[in-house]
Image (cartoon, rainbow, N blue to C red; front, side, top):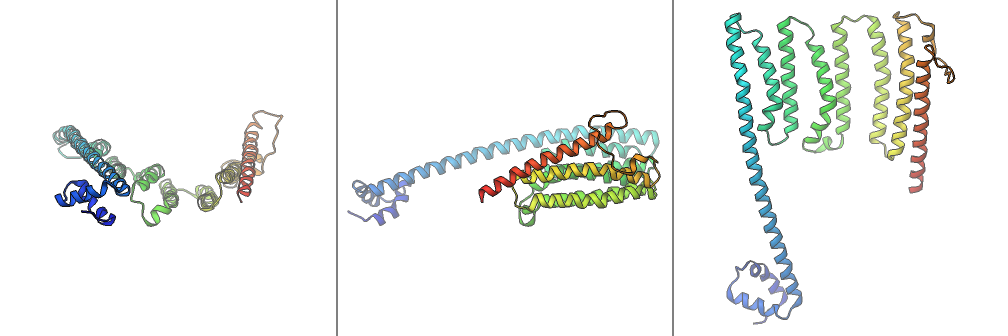
Length: 332
């Protein structure tokens, strides 16, 4: 029985899987004996079936291996947790026996919780492991700092916590954001979120440091002007580099020039503030000192190095800018 190509192509998936009826199979085979087009389609279907089966088998093997690894990790995590419980119980008994109360035991407990957050906990987590570990480490670190501060009767917890959070955020937040589902604003503005968080925590750190040392006008007179100048400068450079559609050479040139100038003038500004608020009375702090490239002694070495950094940075930055602008104009 002769059938058309359309009917044959409708039956080919069933024929390739071997589930069509005997009459349909005979009709398809009769058509394939003289139709090159349908034979090619049958070969394509068989290849796709083989690839699908291979992919399915590969996924199954990977899933089985992942389950084995997860079970092994869970077992190791349980063993580590059990080992960490031993010093907890020992310290609990000793603390009760010696002090008749629980005091330094909580320090040991918080310390072991901190240890568990980076040893046992990651073995129990299968998704977003780094994010969960960092969050747990941060919480247990705060708990340990607070416990020690209370035990010794200190008042430094907020300074230590702010400094720790600032450092952890600067290092770990970019990785945490990259590990999270990339949706909406998070996908487009991860760098902006990180920079905003660092700026906020810097302000919190400075505030707590000032409160802790009972800072007077000399502290605030230096910290606040410097922050008011250089934080906006840092934001301008960041926004320019992140959101302006410039090539990498132009961005590198802008960054090099900006950092060189900021490094040079920040030293002068700090010296001026030191003189203004009475830390030191030195005439050379009143103005920018000249560059003496041929004179290197104790009086000139510091200013000469600053000038060399400025000149080198400006030269490198300008070269990058010129090359970057030239390439951009050629592409246009």
